[in-house]
Length: 235
Image (tube, rainbow, N blue to C red; front, top):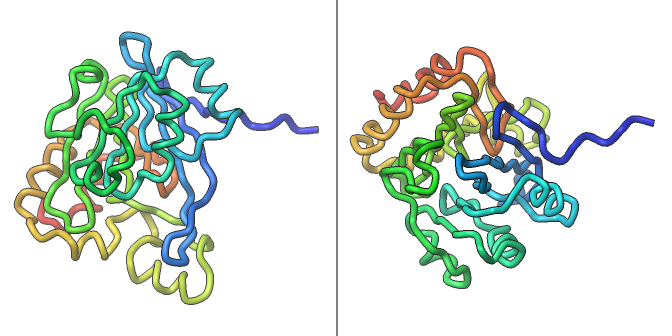
């Protein structure tokens, strides 16, 4: 009998990934993924939390105390309330605009241009603004050289969708030879100048790994991939 895979998959020193259940948005199935980062002080930061199960909660508690819970954009908020209830001592951080969208969630802070002092020693961050769908905070875990995108980059496997959804996903850029910025997000950038400034900072990171909420983990030639992905923006 094959042993079950651990809920938390290590991706380097003090960084773990966990897959959550699929969610359906407008008829499209999306896989979900979160990251857990142990900060220098020993506490944990939860990036883009997925649905919280009892086994996942136990696995998280085994790693250490949850101190920071981060919603990197306005779209990834479905599980935040259950995480707040399970870890009431953790601070909730929201992308700009999310506190107004989810007034039922007691957020502590909004994400800004600079890293919060709680994680500034371990993570850099860029707030990519200028998009009508959502601003997105992109994070960089220095110890592992990992850049974390939520929705601005996506890379679904060719067979993930079927029928007309597959055709739409291909036209949108969700499905392709490598991760890309979906067409709907490209069209939603009303202020490309401010977006280019944010992306330029991301391209300056010496990224060795790429993590996306909706796509494979990339460990080869990440800077070149990111450069190609945002070439259309003129970054």
